[in-house]
Length: 116
Image 1 (cartoon, rainbow, N blue to C red):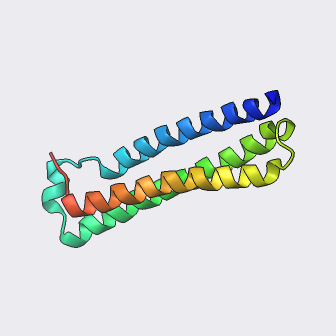
Image 2 (cartoon, rainbow, N blue to C red):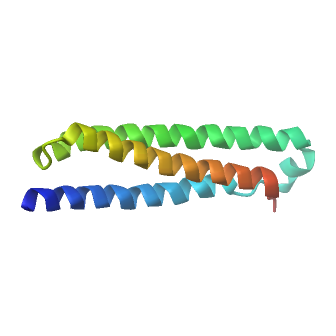
């Protein structure tokens, strides 16, 4: 019983970290650009900036998923018998949430074209 509750606390901590990271990635994806750049951009330039922001968001998502997988392999091993499958599922979910936040932010950036 104590082992499963310790594993649940560890995974809930990762969920909280994933939510925080998703908010940060979304903010970085949708954030404003300055006027000097916005007035010089062509319509294709907005898409290019959106793709650059999407690439950064996906790189952060992959890095977070790998870090979560390694952390789960190291720490959940003592709490859950089938720890490899749990580590894989949690890391895929964490990376997916962060990637989804980045995709939503980049789409919003390209559609709204925010500048000061």
